[in-house]
Figure: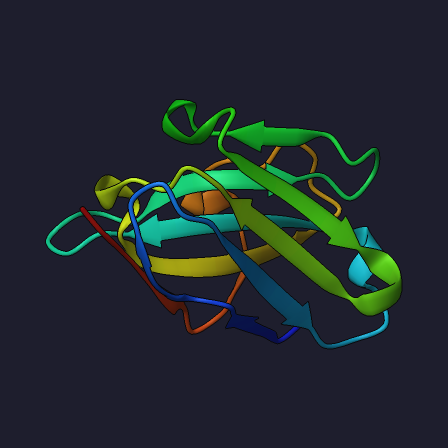
Length: 124
């Protein structure tokens, strides 16, 4: 079981960039597939991106492809979400999620552990 702590959220104007970080506890981080989800006000939480533990394969929701990049540093037990060309519709609380051993996780039900979230606000 890992514990997750997100950081890096904030307010930015449209077109700007932010980098989110998620630090994980434990010694088995490299065996966890990691993901990012977000929840906009009044909406369901949705998948943003994930990176598999086994081969580093990445998955993105279509609305962020080409703008967001998920990456991981197993030596630092950290996963990142680089967000460029931000749009007002990217506003929401961003959550880090983790699940051990699963490949290709892209839905809420695929993930087992969740962070508390970090707020991202993009103004027009």
